[in-house]
Image 1 (cartoon, rainbow, N blue to C red):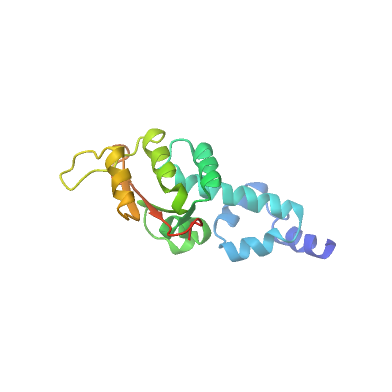
Image 2: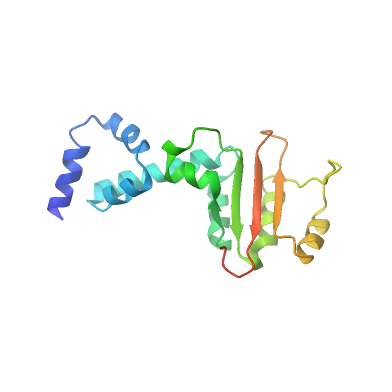
Amino acid sequence: MLERAAVFSQFLHPLPMDLHFPILNELDIDTLVRLRLTCTAADSHVSRELAGRIITTLQPFISNVSKFHDIMQITTAVISGVAATAVFYPGHINCKVTTLTIFTPQNMFLPFIIYLIDCEGYQRTSAHNTPVLLLEIYEDIKNTTTVVRLHRQSPPGLIIEVYQSAFNSPL
């Protein structure tokens, strides 16, 4: 363990503290995981870095990131697509994330949609650009709809796609 701690010490500790996070921000998930295993200080730095990336990615879409995190844990939903890539491989994304893709277990699809509509102010619009009632979404789900696209007025242009798994696991 002392040998691994020395690796971390040689890598970051000689640098001023205000440079640690800009350096960590450039690293992909593979490097962060390896660095995290070196010692408790590295584990703490990497945890803070990943939490910051998640918050930064979710904030445009979600008003209460902490509550959203709780809902994700309760429903065992997972984030995928460009948003996940932005967290794990920030250097590979050269554009703004405008779609948050979420996969939910079959039995948690509707509760997740209800949360987004009731707590986050999202809505689903029909082809005629009119709001769709929750009852209509429920009817669609019963008729094998497996994805619901939601948006809200502010900020404009952001979409959340919620996919329903065919099983009681999100994938």
